[in-house]
Image 1 (cartoon, rainbow, N blue to C red):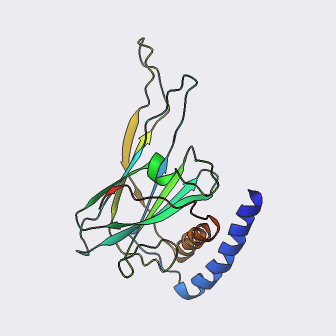
Image 2: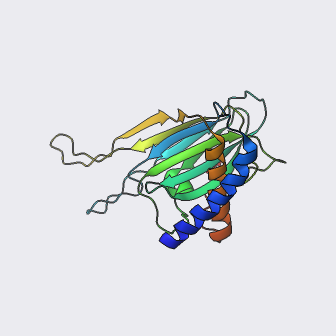
Image 3: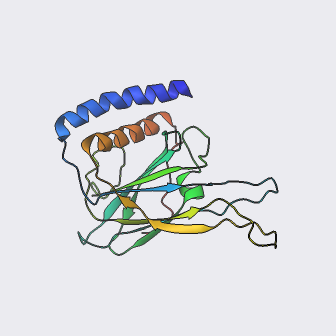
Length: 205
């Protein structure tokens, strides 16, 4: 496990150096959405499993054309677990399951209990959304994520409840180094994963 992580980091560092050299240091705005997930697949001793969280993505139509949601799902230990690119049509709504679409096929085989979901709003290249190379950020996808909070036992009924909340993903500046890092790590998942580490795009468009 540690050896794989070391290999990925070394390869990523080399590619990052090449990409950043020609990418400049300007930060792209309104293209980088960040959110979290928690209690993913959490199971109580009774066998009760926490509900599934959802990610919803909309293309409001600033470009009046298709965009890509480049998805990068990180486990809490900072390792990229899965990545994929999903087409987003103008005024379309895509819904993804955190459990079944974004974390069911991790590179290491270990499903993350919690982590971070990063989405880059980008242009399709020849109609294809490839999160591992030539990602061209373009505003302005909107992303929301539901969150499964820690369970509680309200009142005297004894019923176990997992409260669910929802937040819009935070807008963060996307620098050249981060953009290169995400592509590099996703590229090595494609090379080393033999199919593992590739997420799926849920339903809708």
